[in-house]
Image (cartoon, rainbow, N blue to C red; front, side, top):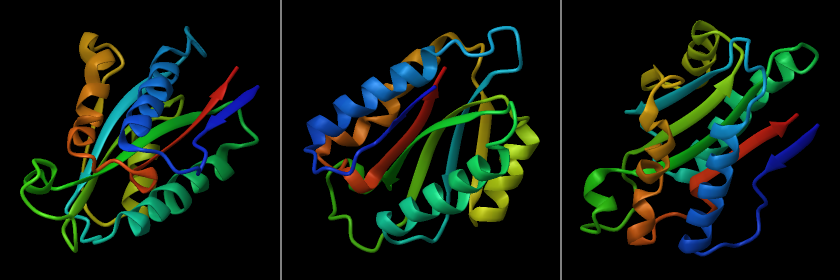
Length: 169
């Protein structure tokens, strides 16, 4: 087993996009459990009332994904994730500065855990509106990274805006 996770060194927006592209490619193309339930979920969480990306990053990483990892670390279940925290559309189009505004997140998860368990953990960890879709069989799931990196065009992607943790087998 090999663990791939984001390092906390400073990156430019271009380097962040490159890191996201690389990690997304590994996440989506990993062929673990090809005959077993290995689903890919696209998750969007909005209306969180979180004002700062560092606070939301902490919540996603520690209160959501680390709890799931801890609970299922001694089982055959797995969960790999990548998330990007974004500002509202007005800010991402470069019209306003990103201070004290609503932020939201897009998450891609590959897991053997059922939809209901993932949704339950999200509901316990985060107050907000959650949209979760199984994209395992969608042909366009390989293009989803373009959607995740769109704020890189306005240099809004920083180390605080994303994270990933992927276990390779």
